[in-house]
Amino acid sequence: MNDISQASVTPDPELTARRDAYNVELRRRLVGLLREGRTEMAPGGVRFEEPGVYTDPVRFEEEHRALFLEYPTVAAFSTQMPNPGDVVVFDALGPSIVLTRNKQGRVNAFLNMCTHRAARIVDECGHRNRLNCRFHGWSFDLDGKLAGQPGADGFPGIDREQLGLIRVPVGEKYGLIFVKGIAGAEEIDVDAHLGDFAPMIAQLEIDKARPIKQSVIDADANWKYVYDTYYEGYHFASLHARTIGALAVSNVMSVRHFGPHIHMGMPRKEFTELVDKPESEWPVSEYGGLYLLFPNISLNIYGMPDGGQFVSMSRVYPGKTVGTSRTLQISARAAHSNPDLPDSRWEQLHDFIEHVVKTEDYSVSETGQNNLKYAPPGFRPVIGANELAIQHMHSEIERILADYRRRNAR
Ligand code: FES
Ligand SMILES: [Fe+2]
Image (cartoon, rainbow, N blue to C red; front, side, top):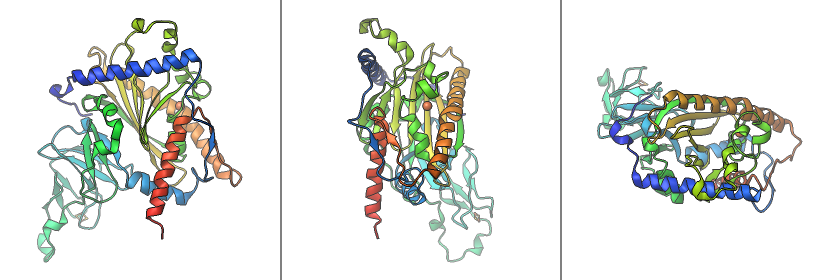
């Protein structure tokens, strides 16, 4: 994976102070819940209004358009493409998108599609000055301009200037590169997209976190059925009894909404020892909880045992059909991590999470998805008051879907 220059990895003192304050505040809330022996709750349990939330192929197409193609998503960490000439291919949205960092250091995003006869241009991430189409050899510079056209005299009367790569909206801030999956040259206003969540994301200093490892997990389950598992700690004691359940307290969650986005935490097992201790005696903790970027991205901020932070991003995308999904996981080490710890510690934790997600969470999602396919008409799952973050996420999805349907009503 790409390295980032030493100059850029010094933690910012102001952001560090803010991060410490947020982490303390989160832990205070979680220890408070442990003291009271409860979790935060929504006013009540709910059932989905539509029975086909996870199974209806028409709804699936609407969601894909409204929540993915037309809605900003994170295509990459900035640290995956820090240098001019770095190129990243992002295929998870459906349309293939290619990102380039140009000579001035700005990120461009294009459909990964040749303007001659629409062939895919770039297959692999890497470093290059030109993007070359293998079909007939046209090439494009890092700003998408047509730079090479073998047999150019075969195209009289066609304006070369109009043959640049097709842009998609892009915006880069806080170490995250956002794109949309539809053609458009506008810049995504990341602060407007994040709203009140922006300062929460800023303090994570993802722009200085060094990527260590990434994986792709395909699952035979709807993207929401898969992603719901990230939204509650109710299942830790049962499903993860021997893995995450040994590390975190089950069914205790603190949830804060920031528009559609959510910050939530589940107490680490060691927090139970703090219940009877005054806060002045609490040891330092790097646990930051889950930062959930609507509708499909989870940033997991976890303290490493010997100092520093594990920053892991999971993005769950719709697959080719309503009953399939693809998850992209990438893990990074925070800039303030103990430099004596080898990268292998981050790799091990990445592998552990991938293994648990695959063999425990997603195996449940896959069998549940199959059951839903054959459930009696009108069967609707129940979401508990304790699963309040799932309730919030789904009600935001319904709001956006309703708006999409209104805009596209015939
Ligand atoms: S399709 Fe790309 S050069 Fe022909
Ligand atoms: Fe889980």
